[in-house]
Image (cartoon, rainbow, N blue to C red):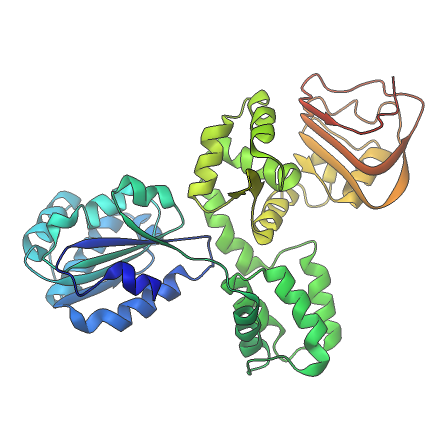
Length: 394
């Protein structure tokens, strides 16, 4: 209903409407539903799927221009030799038609500029729907009407997952507790609910438990690959900021984190803004947050740096990996940050040279651990945050 209100198809203006949100939240599903609902109100229409993927191919944008013209004009074969000619044809052929276009999964401004340059390209009453993970693209293109897709609430999450896992809108009695564990993991993300529901459909209780145990350490590949598209589109500076937040600063006050990141030669304020625009983080009450599955994606990205040897990863947070590296002196110069946060208070014996090889260590956070040892011989000169209540050494 909110999207239909933004479209306001009864009006004669030409309107672009953006749909944005995290990967897997249902932007494409919503776009298709709206398209099918209002398509009969237009003289011509085109649903252009996978704009990001298609644009990466040679002559990809030209092919998308041809698809638009072919769909709307109902002509099977249209010759377009280059992008510039395609722009001119779109302007010339569509400016007097009331049309409906969906550009799905846009990730670069040039895609919009060459497929839907501005409202003057289209006839009165036309509607252009643009779905993207990057809200700033919509701002840069002058899109004034934007719908932000949110995760599902608990009731709708239960229904969607149950339909996939049990083929009915509620779980079987013996699977209720396990179902709510899955819902807690998915946090309302439709992609995760669909993928995990399909994966667990028809499986035994031990198989469900095994899958849930695995998900605590290694994310589902289909979900991971979908979410990682947004990360892959970042520049190095923003990748570093995202990973630091995922490992060390989720839930922390934004201004405090920005100071730490700036001291590490990240351009924090601009980087944080980009991450917000790309739906990778949010700010609530001036605190930095991200969806749990995005955080787990960050953990997996770093785990893949060295799956078997934690000491060769850039960041460490999982207590078993941290303890292995510290107690066995397996640290290396690749480690930039460590968070020691044990599930239960415990004593950790620390060799004086435990940090000797970690010459690039920037961040060290110690929680819920009693560090024993006579002294430390070395801490990196690169250290910018030492958060260690009750630091035991002089």
